[in-house]
Each structure stands twice: as structure tokens, then as C-alpha cells.
Image (tube, rainbow over all chains, first blue to last red; front, side, top):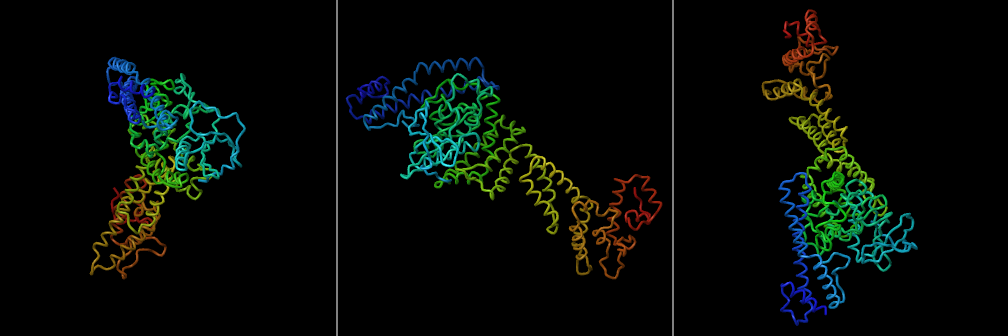
Length: 118
Length: 506
């Protein structure tokens, strides 16, 4: 069931997974899911980094760029974050990875209380 | 650092610790024998991780004195525990009260963030940072500090750049796994419910950031070494090097920040620097002073040295003093022990001087320059040099006379050197200058100690004439001089005595 859900994720994203259909190598599936979560995280963080910079610029005393242009850019980037729905996707992927790891190895560091590496 | 035996820890019958934050470790509350504090006890995975966490938490306490104390304990199975002093009224940072960080209701977020940045804390999540009953921000659970030294997170960037300082509370140029609600499990969020986007510009927050930056800049190597050694029985060198390097990196970036530079010129910076010194001097690791009583003066000297080089008011005074010292040291004779001693003592004093004392030192140095670099002293030195240079096989006693003048000059107290030639009161330098090199010439020094100008050596006469004229021009009113001119020769005042020979005064 979980493997099926994982494969669905990979197919949906188009970043691979079709070759894993029918594959029971759970390690490969987990690795692919982790790569997908990392990809979403990277996209999200790059967008948010730029939004933070704009926010700081907008609130700065020394405003360098055109205020209106900055506001428009922020709205655009914010929409990209919302459209990408990265936070939800990453959360679901992490939950799935955790379940698969527990199933495969009995334990998972993912989504625990401490910082972890995908 | 003394390690506490867990047998000295007594559980308090409490309903348990309620914390909204998820926690991996068993937590209990209790007290230690012979200690009135209540401690929160947390199991640690291993000894190294325990000491690393303690080091980080105690570092917070050096910079932020109201941080809770932490200690290490062990049981008979060699299981290690971290004991943290209970924080009265501890609660997670509230959401939707962001204005309170800007209006002074909640204080200390700036300091906590700078320390976290400095210590490579990657788990700065709400709950690991919270408020005490006095609404002061408290940082707990430092087990993910020094992340650059962990296997999993050693490849991340933990830079302390100008941007990372300017843009706090946003973590920029710096990796964090959790950072308030701005980064949650590695995922960055566009908005925070805890802090406003405008916080980085707010004066109170900037003041907190500046204070923590200053305190870290002012940590002497000496303290860092003893501090780390107090907590880390092994692998201490890695941590010492890391802390020193990050302090230097932080200082470089902080000095590029306009707000920090402005703060350095304020009286508050001086107060904060003094408070840090007191904190370091009285800092205890497990109830024992980190800096022993014997080491206190060395710490003070090094700490004030750093302060004097960083705070502009001190820096200017120190630079001014050093300029005077440079002038005094230029062409100083090896035989001038009085001046050499004064310079050394002054340099020592400057190390620990307060601003007021530095002003006094500067004034004294200026006066000493006036005394010892006066035209008269320069002329005497030139005379000594001429005697030495002209000394040869056929010149009798020139070297000896030069040595005698030099000895008399350097035996003269510094404050008496300025007018050695023009002084009306006969002194040893005048006597040696007036004396003849040839033993068969009559001594110009009378039995009364006065100098008979008519019998004095030409060198003395020339110098006397040169400087009497100057003194006369500079200080004596015309009328006064004229009356003395009319009176003629005075043997106790050689300068005036020269009038007998008809020398003109002006």
C-alpha cells in the first residue's frame, strides 16, 4: 500500500519512478522519495530566500529598488510558492519516507524530534 | 568541571514536565544535595554529546547572564545526564504577539539569536527558545549547537556575514534546520507568526544584537581556552579553535555594520564591556570559578586590551598615547633609565586603564614630552654628541665630559629637565657643562654651589646665552628685565649674570 503510494508520487512528479513500478526494492524507492523531497525543498527555499530578501528590502530605510516593482515581484513569487504547494508535498513525502523506513528498517530518524538528513 | 553523581539527584514528586515540544529524551525534575536550585534532568546519548551541549549552553550564559545554569551528571552505569536549572515560568514563544519583541515587552531575542548563530545552532525552534516569567528570552537544549562539528551537518554553511547580522531575525547566509517558525524541518516559510518582518530594523532588537556582538568580540583567547577546558576533558582544541575563529569572523562582519559602529561609540557599549568582564571573572562551572583568583588579573588585562582596541573612544585615546610614547622612544638613550621606566609603567597602566585614567595618562605623556624633548634638552644632547664626535687623541677629556653631562642629565627627574639650562637654580647639568675638561683650569663652581660665569666653559656660556634669551623673550616682562639689567651681575642667576658682559637680551 505504502509502496504503491510512493510510486504514485514518483510517477505524478514525472521525475522518475516508472522504472520502479513492480520493483520491490524499498531502498531504491525511499532514496527516490528523498530525492523528490529534497528537490521540492530546494525549489521552495530558493523562492522563499528571494521573498525574504524582498521583504527586508521593502522594510529597509535605504530602499534601493522601485517599491512597486518589488511588491509585484513579491506577489509573483508568493503565488509560485502557493501554486507549488511545496510545504504540503514535502510533509506528505516525509511522512511516507518515515513509514517506509520503519517498515524496512524498524526505525526512522526522519520526522523525529531532532534534525535529520534526508 | 566537576561531574555530579546522580545519586545526589533527588526526584521531585511533580506531576511531570509539560512541554509542547516533542522530546526524545527522558526528562525528570529534581534537586541536588547541597544546592537549592531545581534541576531538569535529561538523559544524554553519550559523554561527548553531553559535554558539547553543556559547553554551548554555558556559552549562552557567559553572554546572557540570566540563562539557566547547566551541569553534567552520571550514574553508576556510566549513563550521562544533563541537568538544567529550572527556568521559572518557562513557556514557548507566543504567536501573534510579534509587536512585543519591538516594544520592549519581550527582551533578549537579539542576544539569543546572535549566540545561536555564533554557536552553529541549527535547531532554533520555538520551544528550544522561549520566555521566562520576566518575559526574557531563554535558549534551552543546545544539543544541536556546534553542528559544523557533527557528521550529518558538517558540510553546511554557517557563515557570519554582514548580511547575516543585518538581517536577523531572518537566518541569511546561515544554515538552520529549524529557526523559529521561519524554517521548519529544513523548509523555509514566507511568513512568521512569532516575529514581524520589520524586526531587523527596530532599535531595541538592534541594541540586543549589538550587545551580544560586542560581548563575543571581547572574549579574550585566554578566557576561551580556560572556559572550554573547564567543560571539555577531551577534544577541547577543536572547540577552542572553532570559537576563536568564529569570534574573529563575527568581529570582521560586525565592524562593517553601521548600527554596531554607532553603538560602539555609546556609553552603553562601555557598560556592556565592563559587565562582560565581571561576568567572566565571576563565572562558575559546576560551582567552581572558571578563572581562578590567580588568573583574574591576567584576564582583566587581556579583556581591557581588547576593549581598548575596539571602542572608538578608547582607541583614539590609546592612539594618542602611543603617539606620545613613539615621540619619547625616538632617540631615547639606553642610559635614560628614568624615562625608560616611565614608558614601561605607562604601557602597563594603559592595558587596564579606564577612560578617565587614559585621559590622565595622555595628559602626563604630553607633559613628559614637553619636559624631555624641550629645546634645552635637545641642545644638551647635541652638546654631548658633539663632544663625543670631536673626541680624539689630541682632545683632552671630551669623552669624559660628555659622559658626565649625560649622567647628570639622565639623573635629573623628568619634570625638572625642561629648563635645565635657563633655570636660575644651579643644577648638576649646568655644573658639568660649566666645568672645564682640563684639570689645571679653575673650577667655575663656587664653594657655595653657584657658578661663576666668568670662569665657566664656553659651551655653557653659549647655551646659557641661547636659552636665557629665549626664556627672557618668552616669559619676562620688559620692565622687569631692564631693572635687572641695570643691576648687573648676579652670580646665582647665570642668565642674568651674563648682562655684565653686555649681551643684549632682545
